[in-house]
Amino acid sequence: MITAEDILELPAASRVSQPAHLPLPLSPVTPVSVIIPAKNVAAYIGETLSSALAQNEVGEVIVVDDGSTDDTAAIVRAIRDPRLRLMTNYSAGVSSARNLGARHASGEWLLFLDADDRLRSGAVAALLTAARGAPRAVLVYGDYNTIDSEGRQIGRRSLLKGRRKPSGDVLTRLAAGNFIVNGGIALARAEAFRAVGGFDTSLRYCEDWHCWCRLAAIGEFAFAPELLLDYRLHTSNTMNAAVRTPQDFLPAVARVFDDGLILARLPEGTASGLRRAAEIHLVTYSAMQAIRFGRYRDAFTYLAMIGRRSVKSLPRSVIRVALARFGI
Image (tube, rainbow, N blue to C red; front, side, top):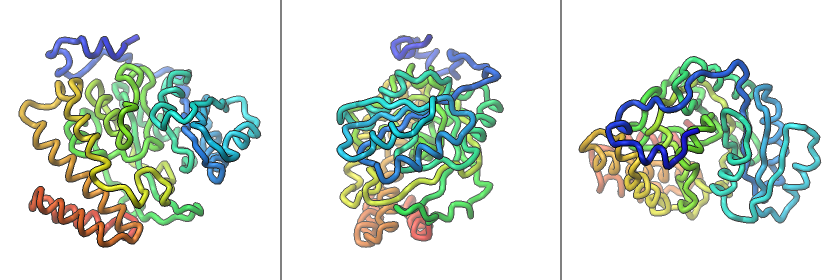
């Protein structure tokens, strides 16, 4: 089995070439482990679990309770399904909870589902189909739509039907900005996830982006062009809370561009430009979220920040913010 130490000890030339260290064939039966970090989500955890357990290809669902003080754990215990397991993480944080679940997972693939989101019917099957078509992939991913706190559809991303996102060697594109957005739309090969060390628990935000970049440094990705997840938007979401600003997300940029595994695979001389693109991407994302929640002054402030960084990037950011206003 490959370890993180094995990857870091590879000669630089080996790390820069297209990786072939991971076992590539898919077995006829490919079990999937769904890992759900949960803290005080009694209002949503039942619906989330129902959506995961309804996927025939899911071999186990591991809920890691991260110190809930409501009925979250009781609701999980009340569900009678042999695939469901409950673990306790004692308020160590979402990344620690995900890593704990991954260490105990038995599936060949891991799906990290937030406890207030819900998988759409056939989501896991669609991802596995994409994986079978891309046997070198260490991660396969799709797309999502958005719902509100009550579960009502608010997104209009179906208007983007047919849109293609990157497949293959995606590291350069991914380093410029996280186009995966939510772990609930992705299957990560378990061996690869463990090899890169899982999620960095030192990061409070965008830890998933950093992890995806490390995965992209050792293998290929594949895109399934389908809406697979209902992503719940409300002010208690980590990424959507009203107090979040671009400055909260910038430490992740520093971490990505200080990571030896990632830097060794980026084309020479591109890191500086990609870092600037990543910063603009996160500021744009902040403006998009501000618009979605009616914080128009903040949105214009963030767009002004983009203009100061790169006038050339401003029109595209403005378009993305305008589309976000209409749920796209």
